[in-house]
Image 1 (cartoon, rainbow, N blue to C red):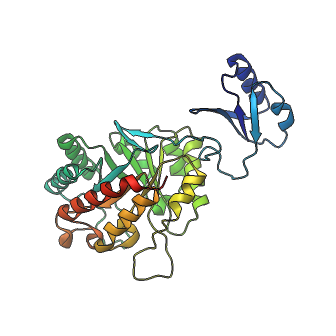
Image 2: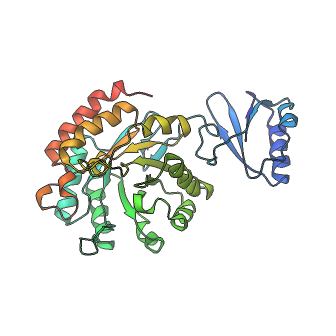
Image 3: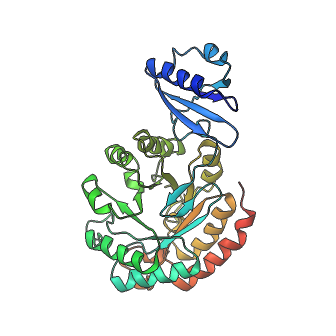
Length: 334
């Protein structure tokens, strides 16, 4: 349930309303927008008298929210959320490109790629230190050393860094990581999500391979219920019967999520398609569809990459992609 207050509502009456609701065991959340202030009610609101609240002088309207996600719901928070990552903003009209290799391999590799993607216009650097792989024999990442190499690249370029966490026990290693990524395989690792909700770090939450958009938003709700509202959603393709691409990129997710939630939306065309030749057209399509950003894998030598080389762009190809994305950005649907 949300209570929409009238403009310039008396602050003392608003506080009295909040205290009364809390006395009923209802958690309240204030959202101050450009034109309206909304009180979100979280908990069992079945016994709350809507007519009584509606009759108050300070109340303009009362609405019940049928969807199970409350904090992530646009009805709860009408203005777009802007996530600030060390001064780099995503959402609310702020568009960013996140770029870098699938996995951190060497200091030379990550520092060189970081310099290249920054020059082309990327706002954040991605790189995997811990790598969840289908095969136990595949490269699993440099782990703690990989994070240190990412931090070195950050010192050289000033780019905030994004890296994936796989286990709660690894959280202390991510203290200096600017954005913690939750991969598709961990989207419903609820213990991990609860722990990340206790932090205030921005969380990039990827959609699971076979998960609905409501399930994605419910996972975001786990993080937000813990008090961390710095959540960025990422569409990275879902598994279908199609075999010509690694996954099927669900671009319809962008406008659907835009309607359902106030959270920023990023699209990952690299993992979605699995092939470098498809990354640019899908990145352009995601941009025009209204995404708040794209995440692209860039490697200095894709043919010899230790992880996901076929979907990685060279720095030169990424530069062309970035120019195209910024060219079509003014035509994006919002």
